[in-house]
Length: 335
Image (cartoon, rainbow, N blue to C red; front, side):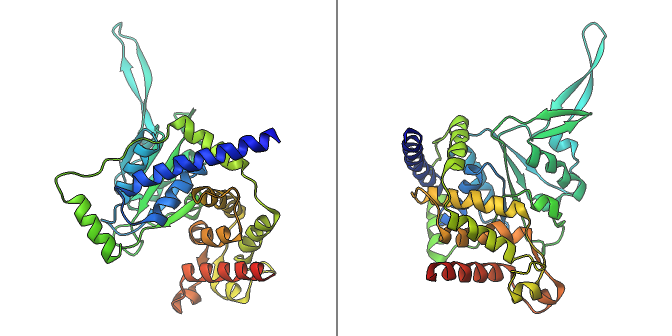
């Protein structure tokens, strides 16, 4: 009983701090509440986020604000076609001492931080993109035959221009799967754009302030994993993930007709974490099936693909995911 009371008190206290963090972020990143919530969800779950949107929509500003509000030391890497893996991870250099002795010294790269902003990640070559794989999954890098751990917390928030733009390289499936969520950043509506103009073109701008410390973020991540998830929600997560595998007997006909390959077990793990984060950000003590439907698109979009015939017909993956997830949720509610 004491553990349950401590968990309840901890979640309620964390919800207050999250409300403060959200308020501080939205004063600088205006009118994109869903984008902010998904970004916070990625940090709360201990994962990484992929921000997808056209240039000029505030993706860089969002990441800079998050690093301040969450109290994380951050670095920024501008990905370009000539960027090399050593520019990210670091390298060893030969130094000569005052006594004439020589020894190799490791110079850490910008990846040694708590929040790494990988700006326009799909403009770098696949070789350089792959330099992030081990760091994102294992929280360590290997340089000159030695494993070098990254201090927790460690998060990557990458920005990506749409693949249709010139000069971009599609991220490989293995790298995409390392991102907990894909966060689509849309154009703002007219009222939001008016607010952005007023807030950012005057003599002064609102400044973000620290709400969390790295230790508090780590504690929040541990607390989130202790949040209870009901059997109904867990079954819905399994149903949803398996429904998008075209070779699974339970998948609907439209999935078998349209989907080339579906999400793996890591997608179910991501849903299990992100539904908790959504519930926590909304001030609830446990997730429900509506959270599963709401998190399906950001968790699954980058973990599956349409086949050629579906793309030729103009099918949209986001629409397929949202329609299927909503239908399954309504079926659960009706039952």
